[in-house]
Image (tube, one colour):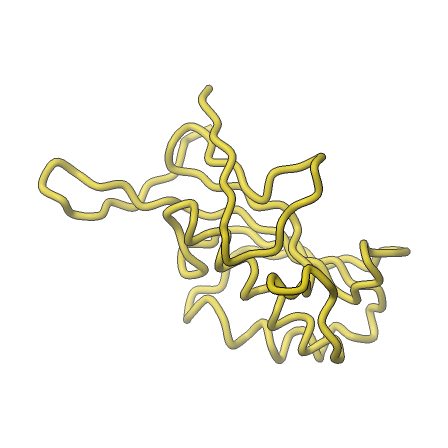
Length: 143
């Protein structure tokens, strides 16, 4: 099995004990959870759970881009909420991403999130591969 850590200059810098994403066996990207950290200040943004959801998804997008993927190629999402009462508000923002075919998703409430965040989102995505003719091919590792 091969694995490669992925970092993005556009996303917040990770803590030293995890990688923002891993490309495993070539076509699959596993992203660590993202919160609403502003990459410029490395601090949690001001705003409600909807603003935090937008920023967390944008940060995931930056990491996916650095891995040769995108939000459109996400196949599985895990959402962690501080308060399950925010479920509907998060879904209003969430529905704006990922196009017509939404990825599989789990959403759970947790006792606490890093840095006082209200939401954290992680995902698994496909990675584009180029053929010898230069065309992109979507693929996923078969388990």
